[in-house]
Length: 272
Image 1: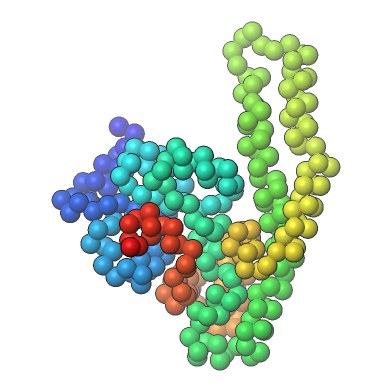
Image 2: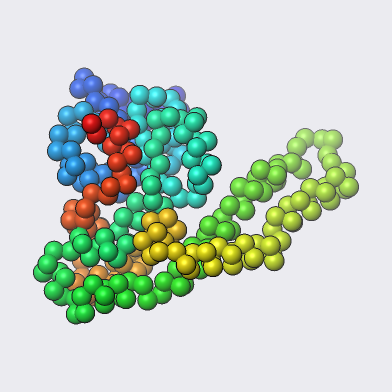
């Protein structure tokens, strides 16, 4: 029995038991913490029908859902394009994809954060919401360039894999001759052409520079880094020191339950 099958068996025997609960799989323990908060605030009796479980990672969520079609699962959007999502959900209809880049994307948008602060916290910030926004977005240009590089360069690996890199030339004998190898190497080299890659990054960077900040925060910024490196540090400075996990949970408890999660609640049958 594979490790994945062992995990499925453990969930069924140790957690579901005779209760007949339905399973919502998420990637990690941080996701469990967040969605336990959101579900508890939105649907106080959700635990009577659902069990929230961390699968470990994105890949394992999908693999487990393929084996358990009556379970539901949620994964981060990350680098998946709209076409990727359509393809994944066609193969795995019980899979939901986070409407934002990742979970931390719910912790970085200035207006959403400001709305989540109790009044006594807002009073600590001299200059109010305008100053808070300024503090958060001081190096926005640098993070936009980071986003353009992340979204522009990361897909190159998949493109290379789709062109057979490196397995196309590593099969068993007889091996390709030099002419065939040269053709394949040129294909790979073309994908990694420095000017072409840079032009693509520059075009995306220009597009992102004109985007609304809230859309940048939701879809483009690498929030897994932006939250701990920017948001958490700014809040430590403005509101006082607090452990990172404690602050994350505090924000999740006071921010509004995101409306864009309705797609998940519908998949779970929690919305009328």
